[in-house]
Structures are given as structure tokens and as C-alpha cells.
Image 1 (cartoon, rainbow, N blue to C red):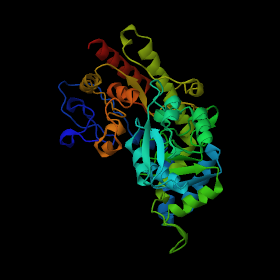
Image 2 (cartoon, helix red, strand yellow):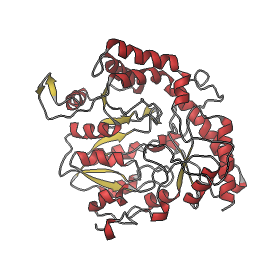
Image 3 (tube, rainbow, N blue to C red):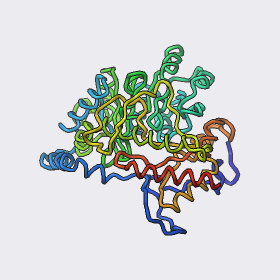
Image 4 (cartoon, rainbow, N blue to C red):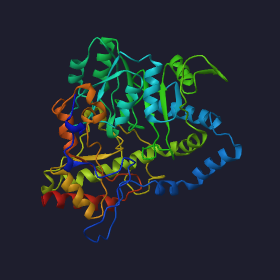
Amino acid sequence: MEAANNAPLWPPASQGDEERDDGVPEQTPRTKRVNREIPFFLTKPQYLTIKDELDAAVQRVLDTSFFVLGTELTAFEAAWADYLGVARAVGVGSGTEAIHLALRALDIGPGDEVLTVSHTAVATTVAISSTGATPVFVDIDPHTYTMDCTELERRITPRSKAIVPVHLYGHPADMDPILSLAERHGLVVVEDAAQAHGAEYRGRRCGTLGAAGAFSFYPTKNLGAYGDGGAVVTNDTALAERLVLLRNYGWSERYYSAIKGYNSRLDELQAAILGAKLPHLDSWNARRRRLAALYTAALADDAGASAIQVPTEAAWAAEASACTTNDFTESCKPVPAPHTYHLYVVRVPERDRVQARLRERGIATQVHYPVPVHLQEAYQDLGYTPGSLPHTEQAAAEILSLPLYPELTDDDVQYVAAALRETVAGL
């Protein structure tokens, strides 16, 4: 597919994303003086809540002076596998590499097709392309933003070898029909659970239902390191052992490569940090659900908010207790969390205008994601055109992510919700 002057097909120039890809809002001049700033995300408040534990974890690694493939990684892999209820977890360099190595371990490569969604971080597609396989995009359910299972079946061809469903924003994809289709057509399933730490599908943790599950520990994730990191989880011990080889040059012993491998390892510092954070994950997720519930109540119950579409929780991802206090360290007891609200995403008319007006009021927002992967310049060779995936493209034009992290206060949420209501009502 060719584009005039090699210009991106989506979005129009006036609708470009105004946030950097690193998740930090651009520092743009404000047209008004504001009395309150609500950042989209902050890492320091969480650090301060468990500072002693994190400092001790880092110091432990510095004291041993062993930084790659050591005891901290072994301990975290065991703890993460136990938390998820799987046989093995294999730490790798990033969430992107987790998907890539899982597919390679399952012998996915050139000539194969891998079905996934276009409404996702481009990293999902990068991982598939890195194997030499061809990504085939499936449209989304417009309510959950996850893979449309009816559309999925229509996209399967004789070249199809794998499915990579994405548990987006913390909401699980509908795995039962996906797994059923995969079994019927002889396909493997690798779950992209990069945004679904602790999320559940019908009582089972996301990432544990397919042949393998891929997690990212990027700093903004519900369980985030202080740098890049990822893991592949599986109940197949032979697959796990192949992943152990692939992440470290294919070495079966030092300096001897039994297979062609890569360099993609979760280092000791990140493993130690993740190990210190993991006991708090369920409490943090509960707090996220509490804040999401506050947003939904504030936005859905107001007559002026009728143009604002709040997130939908599907039947397979809708029942969990929530933290009821601002004390997100002890009072939020570990509970099941089908939807873990990595992001709180609304749909609004005139999204870019709304985003600009919220910025004037000191509220940072982001768009996840403004340019569907199938319309990005790098993937024009796949032959998709505007209109190929209508639900995906409509969502990309309307979605807006609001600030949400455990340390955000209830009052912060009410302030953001009120500003959004007033902004949309004034369009």
C-alpha cells in the first residue's frame, strides 16, 4: 500500500498525539494560570510508600555485586509464577521481547501469520514482525477494546499459526472463544498481558490461559520496574527451558550455543525491585478499581456527561471488591481483580479539543492509542487502508486516558471528572 509523499494515513495532521511516547506530557505553554496540576502518572509517590523495602532490595544487589542471571531473578521468577498459579516464569529484557521469545520458542517464523489487534501498543506488532511472521489484524469489540472473536474466525487462513490476544487497559480479552478457535484450527495462543498484572478471566489470572503469557514490567505498569523488563509465563516446562536458552544466546552451557538465541535478560536490580513490589500488587490493583469506580460514578451520574462514554466491564471481568480508603498500603486487602484498570479510558466527542482544554486546567491526559498500527507508515506494506478496521479506527479518534495510579487521591479524581464534565458540556 502506497501513501502520497509517504505521509502517514492516520490521523490527519491536526489530530497528532501531543504526548511523548515515553509517557511524559510535553511541557507546553499554558494559556491560563492554573492552581492545580494533576500529572498523568508519577513513580515517586509509590517509591516513597515502600522506600525502605525498595532501598533494601537495591542495596542487597549492590552488596553482592552480581547483576545478571543471579539469585534475585530466580527468586522473582518463582514468586511471579506462584502469584499467577503457573509452573514457570522466565524473566526477559522487556514486554516486547517476552512476546517475541514466546513466539520463537513456539517455532513461529517466516511464512507464518499471527492474528492480533491493531488497537494496541505497537510493541505487540514489533514482537510479531521480529520473528519474521506476518501480523494479521483483527478488529476490536467497541466496548471492551479487546479482540472481536467473531471477526477473528474470519481472519484465519491456512498460513495462520498463532493468536496474540491483548488484555488491554487491564481488561481481559474473551479467552474462551479464542482458545476454542485456536484448538479447532491448530493454533497456539500467546497472551499479551503487558497491561494485565493480576487481572482475571473467569477466575484465572490473565497470562495463564494460553500456551504462554507475556508481561511487561515497564515503570508505568501496575507492577513496574525502574527500567525495562518482562517475563514469559507458562505451564509447559519444556517451553520454559527453551525460553531460558533463547534469552541467553542459546547457551546450554557457558560459551556453547545449543540453539540460535538472543540477549534478553531481566537483570538483578530490576528483579529485586519487582520482588519487593509484588506483595503490594493486589492492594494497588484494589486501589485502582476504587478510583475507577469513583470516576465512573462521577461521570455517568451527571446529566451533562451524557456524551462521555465510560469504560465497560464485560461479564467475564466485572466482579471484584475495591479499596474503600485512601490507605493503599495496608487497608486495601488482596482481592480478585478481573479488570485491574491499568488505564481509565473514556470516549468523548472532539477528543483533541477536550484534551487541550483539560491541559489548560492543569490535567494531563494521554491517548492510548492515537494511530492504529495497521495505518502506521511502517506497516503500509501489509495492505490495510482507512476503513479496514472500523471499530479500531473510531476508537482511536475518540478515546482519552485520564490520570489513574494508586497514589492519586479521591479528590484528584473528583477534580478531573468535574473538569471533564464541564469541558464536554461546553463544546
